[in-house]
Image (cartoon, rainbow, N blue to C red; front, side, top):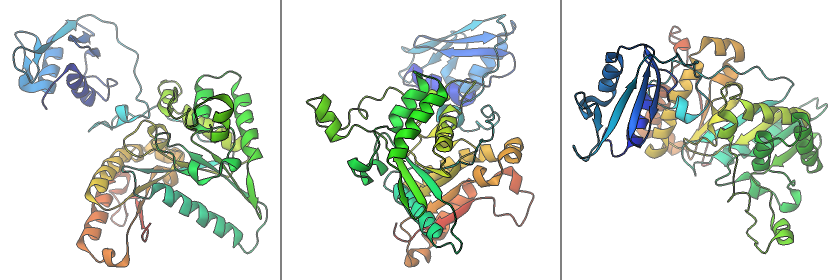
Length: 402
């Protein structure tokens, strides 16, 4: 890997230490700056640090000068400073973020385990590596099938309530499928902000949002649903308070994102916890979440949560399947943890894949078969390797011309 700036050096160090959460024995901490890399040692044996730097940077490391050479030659370098006899640092737990769990080999340590949900409300999230592959359409298809199945039950008693959440705050989709008159005066952006910077106690925050959502809940013969849009500043609201008529003031001024709620080591699952509590307050049976596409921290706190049912949507085009393989490979690390599997079960730990834009002719091609084989091979939890009849836990469904 060529190093063009200190950030490349930091990125390489992060990839070898699970984003600075897992150091070799004897190394207490590593910090990267524009002028130097500082390595804290628990003792005074500096060879531990030098050997590690040599392993990471190879020929870019110049031991005699204590420097890491950048791609521009000897005229550019980063100093390495060793600090001995440092106090042992408190263990750092990874967080449910791509920057902590996304590196190759970053499977040895997982974030602090969440607690099982309380209450009846379940969460299901739809994600995709690429945009434009039918993720939102797949969610809506699943939602509609749920609705049809509910209405066709032979003995239909009671009700079923679903909360739809547009969590794609970069390119909202679900939000635009509802008329302004059918959308509440609260949003996913505001819910994140109120959760991160609470003006009142948690229960009051949740109750306030639930009350507004309930006002816009629709009911069809016992099947109830409502939407938490990505943003809530409608054209009418903007006209009242500003000369601007963009209707997107929240989208262009986002102060709190899901990753902010996940950055504390003590409560890395707060984003999911708050959303599930909102679902319980609404007396919802299910929350369906449309996540941001890609390797985005806008999605990772929910995507990596073992309590959330995950649907990964992709076409079998090369650029889409390549990224989906990467995602499935990283989700394998969650499924490999036997404690998590015993605690949460296969239903949420094992993702489900939806392949879109598939017709009967395409199913006969080698490309279709090879694509399914690649997806299956990308998700290989150790838990299934002892069973010759196991299907590796990955469920793949193809959708006709999504």
